Image 1 (cartoon, rainbow, N blue to C red):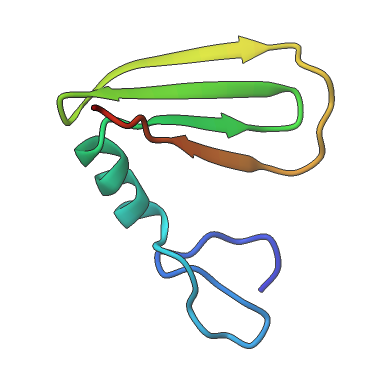
Image 2: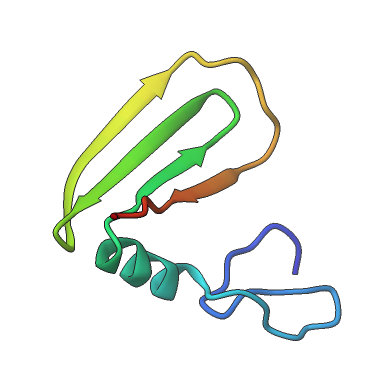
Length: 78
């Protein structure tokens, strides 16, 4: 199946890889991550603090980048 999302990840050989979207969201909340979801011409910045979703910031009209990129920023506390 091409272009789909899976709770358990996917790979050409049908073996599950990665954490999947649900588990990734749980860990992002637990560790107060900033999640950046970049689509072809817009992005969403999803911000967690103290284990809760605190803000979603959108930007429109960005330069074209084909596909979807997801980045998780976890900050170290010393």
